[in-house]
Image 1 (cartoon, rainbow, N blue to C red):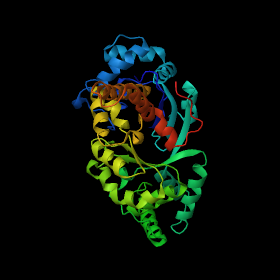
Image 2: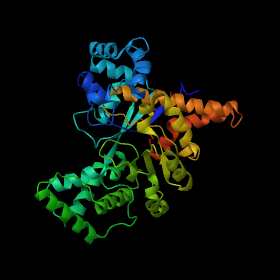
Image 3: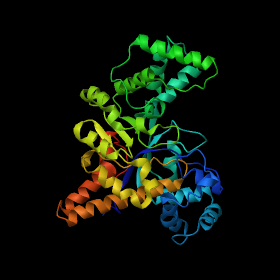
Image 4: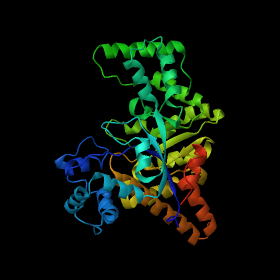
Length: 377
């Protein structure tokens, strides 16, 4: 049902362009900051088995090839060829790329597009702009204007902005726009911490609110990291229900709010997408992590989320395998969901095809206004 339907990946990152040994490869399979030998191999996990099952044939290997054989073949082909093959196999025709996370050199949106001929668009991370303002020597009094200047400059060609408040302060945010005096006081505190030797890291609730409201003023879709992430996340503070007051306050603006990932709160996110007109959801990051279980989470999210408010994403970072798995497992899970409904008579076969197109690319094209995204396959 979904084999010929194009995908728009509405939230992803670049890929690394260096050769990877086994340790480095396994580290990129997980949200952990490191793979510890006491935990065993990441190949003995849902994502590890998915790599051996679904990525191996793309590299001309038998399914379920051993990790050693897979990595040897990967090295034999070389980074560029492996990346080209795996990305080409996804059927992704447009990437919406978060450029705010670069722990090492990775491909830019333009380079991502060049690898497969797909379209590519940029998402600007808000916290990075605040940190750039401080690093440039901005004073507390001049901080807000400097952030606004950076925001307007960096988003001229962007299609969205993103908040990682979930990582920094949690999602239980005061819904009100902070006052100028509150912003100056917050930056004063931050600058004192930096002067005392702290890293330049935007982690203040007032400043998170300031950035969110400035982003909303642009009218571009605003992405929120929600739910599962790396070890810096306090997961109990990442439930999207904590955003309820902010969603009530922002609904009259009509600016799309994009709740990313959401697991294990995906049912809560589906509820929010149903009751708030401007809320959209995905299950990005977890699709490849859950392997064969991904379809269950897709179905659970769609218990309440309207089909016109559910989008595809991979949140792939580093490994082209994550793009391939994100796309393949999403197609598989969504196809199972739609086929089961068709077989049960809950919707027609033509409706199922129409819904598949909505979820796979049309919703993203509409919300992000991707007028120049490639036509569906």
